Structure formats: structure tokens, C-alpha cells
Length: 198
Image 1 (cartoon, rainbow, N blue to C red):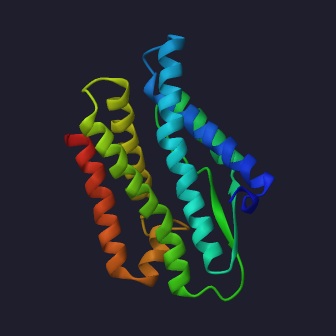
Image 2: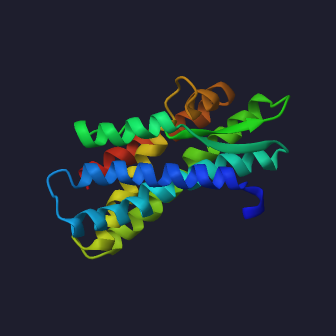
């Protein structure tokens, strides 16, 4: 599998993974400045938003490749910098770390829709996996925190990407199949809501 991820793409994924983890760490430790707390939250960020982001993008890539197209993630260095600076200065994360670019002619609406569905669907599956960890782990412990943040961040990643605007996945899914779009966007925002009321 690694041979299908060129060195440049691997580097782009690692840089974006680290930048997003730093941005979320800055949010989590806003009022706590001790290094131990920062390291714990950096680890949580790497394992929740970092893994979620990487798997989301790889889902797009490998779905496109299954249809016979080449696809690669390309980081957006400027947007990664914006994400870290906004987190540090305003306490807000707006992460648009880049995108998986699909190369090939004649991509059908169905193929484009399925390639686009792959990312948010992966995020939802991860959110449910982290929800299981959250529900099973002792309340307040490190595994409980990992479950809570993993569930919330992956649900938010799915919900954001399902918005039917610009180059986001939701627009392409809606153009292909409005029913699947409705189910995915409702599930994504419903799960985000649940993470705040649990």
C-alpha cells in the first residue's frame, strides 16, 4: 500500500497532520501552559484529528484509485499556517489543510460522488469507534478524553466536509445522490450534537 503513496504525498500528509495537531493542541491548552499538559493534548490531537484527517484523505485517494484514477493529497501550506495562527491568537481552528486531487478524464457523476462520500463516511466510522472508547473508558481518564475528542473531532470533520459548498465533499455528493447526501449530513451533524450533550 505504501508504494501507492509517493514520497512527496507522504511528506505532505505528515506536515498537514503535525500542523493540525499543533492547532488543536493550542486550543486545548489555551489556559494551561505547563509542558506536560501540552504534550498530553498534542498526543491526543495526533491520535484523533491527525489520524482522522489522514484516513479521511486516504479514503478519497484509494476510492479514486479503485475506479482507475490516480489521486494524491496536496497540502496547502498557507492554510496550514492560517490554522495554527488562528488557533494561537483567536482560539479557533479553521483547518483546510489541502485536498486529495484526482487525476483523470471522464470521471462520472457517480464516481465523483462515491470518491467524495469515502472521506466523510470514514470520518463517521472513526467517530463511532471513538464513541465506543468514550463510553467504555473510565470517566475523566486519558482513554475517556481520547474517546471524547476523537468522537467530536471526527464528527465535526464529517459535518464540515458534507456542507454542499465550494470544493467540499457535500457539493459533489448532493450532485450525485441527494438521498445519500441527506443521510450523511444528518448523521454528521446529529453526531456532532450528541458529542456536546453527552
